[in-house]
Length: 311
Image (tube, rainbow, N blue to C red; front, top):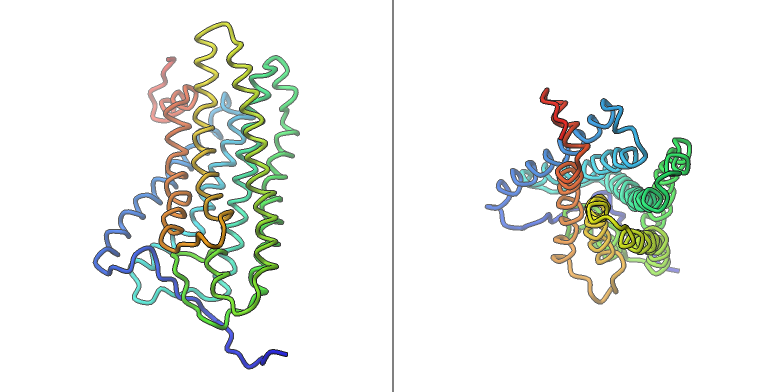
């Protein structure tokens, strides 16, 4: 048997986004501005949907949940990252690392599910608009959203438990700005194959399956839209779906390139850039895409500032 007198890790040291001291203050203000944009943009969407009854539709119900997830998702990362930009020692306790991994995965997986539900919602709306309100009634929407949240909590629990059953006795320095599973696997002094297999299975269920489902939905949507006789109708349908499709592509491509790539392609610096992309860039784009490209949201914004418009 192996010797058990190994020192257990009680905290991790995060190397952060950059090792250049002179960049830390600039990075702090940059990411503070990004974080505030994410919070204000997504909370504005939630507020607009809540106070405007004409936005009480399945589409905006899913969008509200997506915005809430984005706020929770980024809050798992940004406060700690901002603090570390100004700190001399970028440490995180073992328990906080566990909490961050679990919460980050929970909201990330829930977002994958919500994006799938939004694709299904668009498919139903375009395929059978006359029965849309019946098919996507309130009960169905609540069950779909509840399942998305619960799926995130349960799947992330499995992944987190399998990750932190590993022993971290070799080193406690993580070349990242947050606790993330691929980086943690490389610190373990025990066999990680079982945890990695579990992670890949969960990736198939929570990343690949939603991508296949979304691709299927949008393939049918495009076929239906191309059969619309009116050019204006086609333009409106494409406008409604293209914004969602852009968000989906940006989010899934970046996440899959991190979690589903071969171990031989592991690169800490590239992984940090990829993580910044789906932690900061995509959540910042979501409110802009869904508000600036959406007539109903524009009307709601003008009503909020006291200048209602009919166009």
